[in-house]
Structures are given as structure tokens and as C-alpha cells.
Length: 213
Image (tube, rainbow, N blue to C red):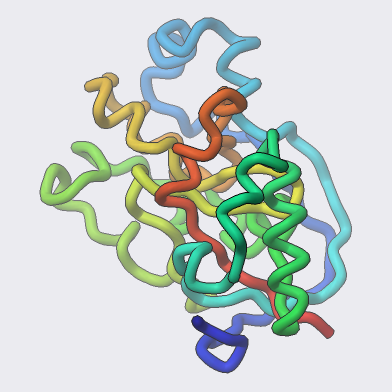
């Protein structure tokens, strides 16, 4: 099992951060995309709300790993845990035993920078899967040296009971029109609508721990 010493941590400074969906002017084919995703209300519900927050400094891992690599748990907990927030609480308790914790949704978004994506505002061609795009920046660390998830079949856990940076591959598998398959890699995106099958959604879930203290 991994421990705190197995990670390189990137420091994120204290300050005010603007987070959430604020990228209407950067979204190609906005009218068609919003209509396909169920209209304005439905579209916005798939992202965290626009907000300004003040964060204290924290140190977050430069990579994410499978949650099973950082926690020890009895499979019987599946009979006791009914929601994703409950699961995140359990994982957070386990991480704190090794001086780590889950990042909050605010922290994950702030660590990704202030762009549409962790790599900036460019919406790549193709789809974010295998060799279906010639774009490579989503596979590279951002300016701070943090490598964010590039595989939409995965997602990262946030302490608030959110799965982010992935949609379980739904848009790719569903053959959604460009640029929709890229949207789940927007840090503001929320992997939503999984209440009834969140254990299945956790199969490819990742943890990007924050160092305690």
C-alpha cells in the first residue's frame, strides 16, 4: 500500500480563486452542445457553480492513484455505505491515518489553474481517448507540475462527495459530438447522476491526496 512518502506534492498558495463554470465564451458550438445536453439548466447542473473562494495554502499530490492503493477496507462496508458522500467520508478517515486527506472540490479546481482545462483554454480536436486525437497537452503536467487525469473513463474523488475530471467514458462510448467528450476534463465538471450505481463508478476512481499539516 502506498504512503505519503510515495508522492511528490505541489504547493498551492493562499488566495482568492474564481472557480466553477465560467467559460461560455470559450465553448465551441455552444448552442448545439447545450441543446444536446438537455438545455441550459441541465447543462449547468453538470458543473460546479461559478464562485469566488479564499483558500488556505495546501500541498496536493502531483499525480492521482487508484483509491484502493491508499486505503485498507473491509468489503462488508458496501452493505453500510449507500451514497458517494458516505464513501468519501470513509476514504478520508482512512487517509488521515497516514497523514493525508482527500482534496475538496475547491482545492481540486484551484490546483488545476484558472483555465478552461488544466492545460489552458484550448479545446482540442478529436476525442480524449487513445490515439483519437493528435493533441498531447492533456497527457502532460500543467504549469505547476501537476498531472491531471486525461482518461475520461476515470474520475478523481473530492472530499465533498464529488467525482471530477472524468465521466466514466460516457461521452466517448456514447459517440457524443465534439467538443462534448472533452468537457468532463474541465476541472469544473461533475460526474453526476451516479447515485444508483456509484459503486460501479468507483471502479476506476482515483485519489489525489493532500498532505495534512
